[in-house]
Image (cartoon, rainbow, N blue to C red; front, side):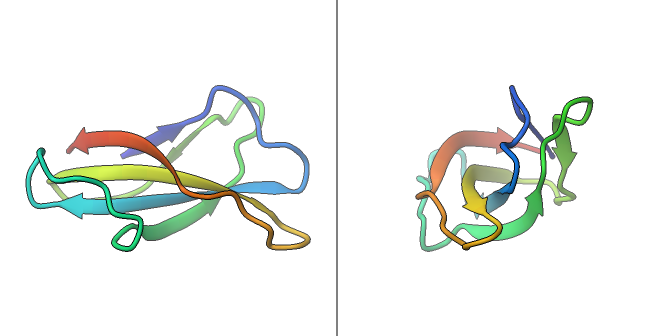
Length: 83
């Protein structure tokens, strides 16, 4: 599964990529069930990050994290993807 950004991260900021496997396409996103899959830095010329997953329906979310302090935004739900 690919996460693509429309712009690079700010200096010192990483993007935390979260996925939640759904039982069906109609299931809803739950912040408690979302799992961190990896941290990514989107940079010019590299605005796509791939996360390996098995077949299924997934809810996708991100969180921006300041590396120096660990301060983070809330989860931002992006939508559902069928793999």
